[in-house]
Image (cartoon, helix red, strand yellow):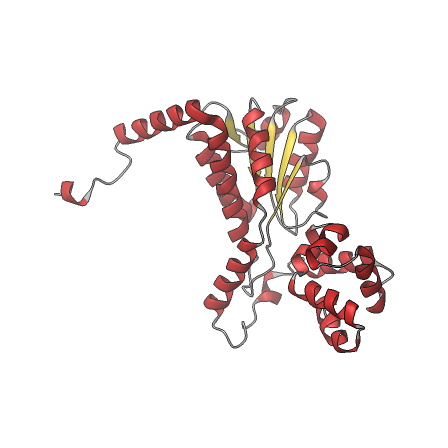
Length: 280
């Protein structure tokens, strides 16, 4: 079944010049079209917002919102077995790396900085990620704990998940990490955070995700860009690490002191292999 971008590319030669320019921009920035407002997209394309409405109608949609929904739906990862196809003329590893590099270049730093300020302001920080997103959540939890050892917790890490959800308090910050299809566990965690009055930072693949509702900060990554059979978590990991680094900077000298203390403890426990010269 052709995607909206396939339909657009076939229609481009027959479109009026202004619509063709907008269509060409959309074909090259389809992820931006799913994550940015029509006004922002038009500004980036150097055209008027109404141009995108007319473009959508020329493609057979009722308007821009209908085209945008179709673009979001087309980017939802299907079953992994359905994605296990050849990458085309480029070897699969090279194609995957190229796609990840392009998606990383589209991640906006400003929302990460704003989310880091929210983390710094919160007395407690929770991190939640399930199934394939668990690894990203664990890395973020580990890095934050290096300089906030008493304030950061991994949901379901040290106690049953339902006990952690019941421990959420107003003013806590919660980082949710997920991509489509969204697990029941992440939806349950998001709902508990909203009910408790937490500040939610959602690290997701789409602003249309059900767990994005009520989030104070939305950090987007592209899970469906690559040709691999499994959705890419490269953007999620890069965003999580940038979030941890920005939160550390917000902490200033106290954060640096705690980081040095953590490094000293790790060294005292001999957690690292000694330098080559010290090996027997």
